[in-house]
Image (cartoon, rainbow, N blue to C red; front, side, top):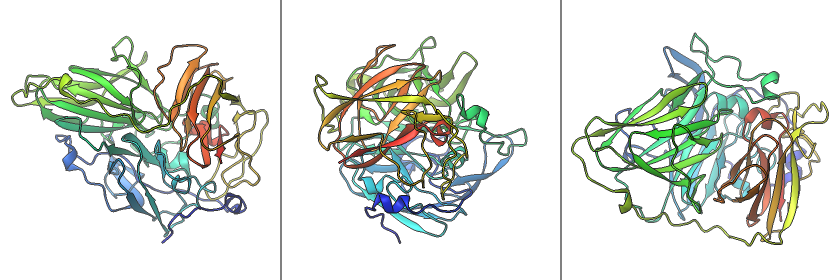
Length: 474
C-alpha cells in the first residue's frame, strides 16, 4: 500500500503517461434516510473503495455513476479538530484518480494533486491519506485526476470537522448540492462541450441534495439545527434562501465569520459558488409539520432543494442559547505595506494543446493565469505563478479580464478578501473567492504551509481548459 510520502515534483513531471478513461472516488454526502437528519445516523467508513454505482436520481436508475458504494452516494466524512485522521483509498476503476481535501490545510504530500504532490492512484492501488485537521468547519473531498468526468458523475462528498467543544445544537443536517446532467432516459448526456467551456460551463439538468430531489429531514419542533451545506457541482452557482424559520449564518468556507453575513431574502439570496460551503444555525418552527425550505432562487427558476420538517411538541429553544463558534487558529496579518503579487485571470492567448497524461485533458485551452494556460497535469517544466516565502504575509491582486465569473480556489492556505474594485466584500477567512466580470480583488494571507499548492478556477471546465497553476511556498 502506498503511503503518500513527500515526492520530488520534478520526478512527477518527468512521468508523462498514457491516456485514461473513467474512475470513481468518495462521493455524495449523507446516507441518511429522507426522514432522518441526525448526525448520529452517519458513520465515517474505515476506507474508501472507489467504484461504479447505480442510483435513481429521477424516474429510472442512472448507470455509470461513481461512489464508494455500488448503490448509494458516498458518506459524510467526520473528523475532529486536532485529532489525527487516516483513511485508505482503493481505486477499482479503469482509470487513475486522487483525493483532494478541499479547504483543509493538510501537509502538501496529502493534498491529492496528481504529479504536483503525488502519483495518480491507478486501478487496483491503495493510497493512504493521513493528516490532522487544524480547522473545524465544513469542507469537501473530490478527485483531482480526470476531474471533470469524475465530479460530473458524482464523485464528491462533504467533510465535517467538529469543534473540540459542541456549541449547543439539538441536531444537524448536511447537504451536498449537486447538479447532474442526465437526459430523458435518465442516463448521462455529454458532460461538457468546448463551446460551454469557453463560456460559463456546462450545466446539469437535475439539481439534487444528497443525490435526492427535495429530500425531507425531520427535527423536533422548536429545536436548534445546524445546517451544513456545500456546492460540489462542476459549474452551477447556488443563490439560496432558507424560508420558514429563524436563522443566522455562522460560518462560511470552513471558518466562523469575522464579519457578519446578512440573512438571505427572496430579493437578495446568498450566492454559494462551486467549491464554497455554508454553516447555518436554524431554529425549527414551533408547530408540528411546519417546514423550513432550502430554496434555489434565480431569475430563471425557484426550486426547493431540501426541506427540514418540525415534529412533535416544541422544545422552545432560542438561537441566543448557542455558544459562539471559536475562531480557527489562522495566522492574521496587518494588510498595510505588504508585498503585492498581481495575477490576471482570463482568455488564453494561443491555442496550446495540453499534455494528456494519466489524468487526461480536454485537448484544447481557452483560459489562463497571466496569459499562460495550464499545459496539463503531466507536462514538464512548469513554473509556479508565484513564489512566496514561508511565514511571510502577502497580498495577491486577482484581476478578472473576462466577462465570466470565476470561483478561484487556493489549496493549502487560508486567505481573506481585503478589497474589490466593484463591491464591498466581507473579510472572512476562505479558500475560494468569486471574481465577477472584470473584477479585481485583493486577498491577504500568511504563507504558512510549505509546498507547491494548486491555484485554479472551480468551474471545472475552466480549470481543465487552462485556468490553473500553482503557488510555491518555501
